[in-house]
Length: 188
Image (cartoon, rainbow, N blue to C red; front, top):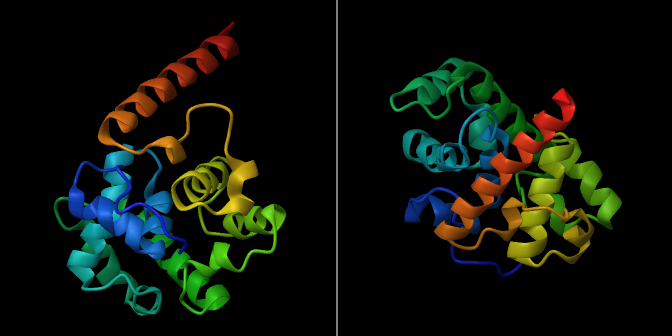
């Protein structure tokens, strides 16, 4: 991974935030879990998984018995509010990283040839759609200096701009306001 921050301030937990910055697979897992839960909860998931499984190695996660992985996700406090579907998604993500990048999650962006290739690679990850392509792209561009991700940075508030706990609070407030505007426009 290109030199980046010592931590990504997404969780409020220094250990979880440092893991996200240091381990590319942790970052991808955090984005996979970022669905119908808070940013803090989603991105705390990789640390919980590593603590419970003993590793965040893609090959190990992919090879874990699905029932065992489900137990790990369900253990209280649960890693996600939908432990079954998210345990499956994380295992599929790990298998994809093994199959496509020989277990090295950072190869997703370090070996991408251009922005279009990066978008295609991110979009091929299990559970990643257009919003996650933009969100991960913004983090890669703004926090890790991945130049080919620069065009993915949106003109509105984005997770990639979060560089402190206060910036996370500001981002979440702007996101709520943007969603409210979108709902109002749709209703009107």
